[in-house]
Length: 136
Image 1 (cartoon, helix red, strand yellow):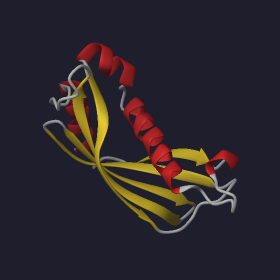
Image 2 (image 1 turned 45 degrees about the vertical axis):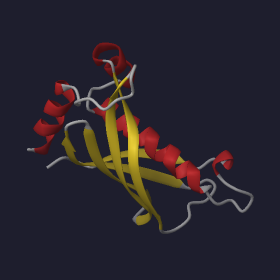
Image 3 (image 1 turned 30 degrees about the vertical axis):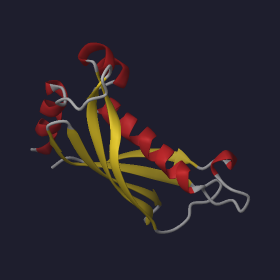
Image 4 (image 1 turned 90 degrees about the vertical axis):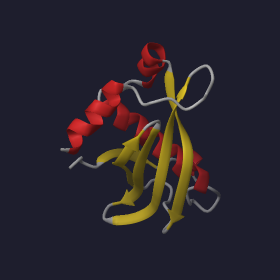
């Protein structure tokens, strides 16, 4: 079973509104950074995937639930959990936590697309092999 990847984030003043609460769109930025670091931890730099395989990953679909607010100066953990892959699609579960408290959950579908046409293409074999090996 694949481990859940976690990336730490500190909430800065720029992430919050006048009430000191994280602006909702910033959770998407936190999750994007965590997905990038998850790929990096698996051994894949997005610039190298683009250069060597002619692909990039783009968000195709996202369902998000805002459960509790994060606030200025909070220390958060952004979780990424691989839930499946097929063809050009990677499915992930993500969560934003403050300690034991879950603040935000999301289901994310990321599509692998050609860098020139932005049409869906198969996920490069090294990526699918790494994901499959870590699921065992």
